[in-house]
Amino acid sequence: MPPRHNAMNPRYLTLATAFRALFGRRAKKIPLDAGGSCPNRDGTLSRGGCLFCNAAGSGTGLYHTGFGLRAQWDRLTPPARRRGEALVAYLQSFSTTHGPAARLAALRAERAALPEVAGIRLGTRPDCLDAEKIALFAAAPVAHKQLELGLQSADDATLRRIRRGHDAAGFARATRLAAGAGIGVTAHLMAGLPGEDTAGFLASVGFINALPVTGVKFHNTLVVAGSSLAALHEAGGYAPMGRETYVAAVAEAIARLRPDIVVERINADPAPGELLAPAWAADKRGLLADIAARLDALDIRPGCRFRP
Ligand code: SF4
Image (tube, rainbow, N blue to C red; front, side, top):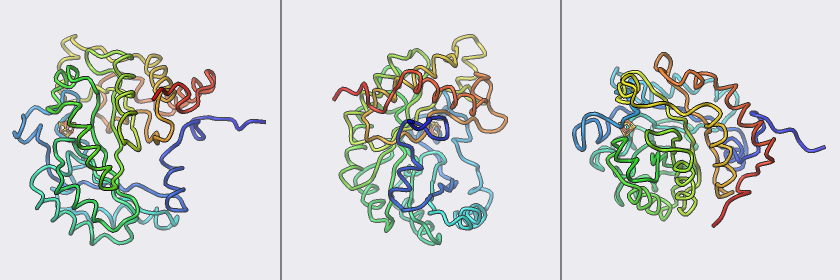
C-alpha cells in the first residue's frame, strides 16, 4: 500500500528532510533578531518599506532592547538542545547584510560566540549583497550556510508596484554570486501580490528554476496592520487571493518546480495580532491540509510538470 501523504508527510522535499540528510539528525532553526534595518526603511532607497511589510520587518525587536544574539540564543535553544537537535542560527529580521561589510564582520564575531552552531541562515535582499559580504559569509566554519533571499515576484512591473526597490536581474546576480561561493539560496516568492494573478506567480517559479536556487518559500500575501497594503486594502484598492486559488496555485507551483529544490514553506504565518486579511490565512493547519489533499487528488509529484 502506498504511503499516505498529508500535511505532516508531504509529497515534496521538505527542509526537515534536507536537514536530516545533512546533519544526520533533526535540526532546529533558531530565529534571531540582529537589529539593523533595510534600505527600504532607513532612507537608502526609501522610508516607506515594501508595500506588504510593516515597521517590524519580521523581527522581534529584541536586539534593540538589550538582548544580543547570545542572550537570545541562550533563551531559545534549551528545548532543541535537550532533544539533541542540530542548531541553525537564523538571522531573519529586516535585511541582515544591509550596510557596510564591517557591520557584517562585527555580527559575525558576535555570532561566532554562539555555542553549538551547526548552520547559519541570513535573511536579506539581493541588493544588500556583494562579493565582499559573500566571501565573509562563505568563510563561516559551519556545514550549512544559506541565504534567504527575497524575490517575491520575477516580474519587474510587480516589483515596482510593491516598491521592492530591486529588480529580478539583481536577484539572479546575487544568487549566482552566492552559489559560486558555495552558499545555498532560498528564494522567497509571494502569491496574490497586487496586480498579479496565478500565472504571474507561476512565471516566478519558472524564473527561479533557471537559477542555482536550492530552496523556496511560498507565501500567500497577507494584509498586515501598519503596512501600506493595509491602507490600499482599506481603500478598496486590493483584494487578497482567495483560499482555493492559493491552494491550487501552490500545488501547481510544486508540480512545476525543479525537483531538487527544497520546499521550505508553503504558507505565510502572520505575527500575532497583525493579520487584517485574508481571514483564512489564520487557519494554517487547515490550509496545509488542503494543499496536501490537492497534491494527492491530482497525484502531483515535485517537478512532474517541470520543463527545463
Ligand atoms: S520586506 Fe524586507 S526589504 Fe521590504 S521593507 Fe520589509 S524588511 Fe525591508
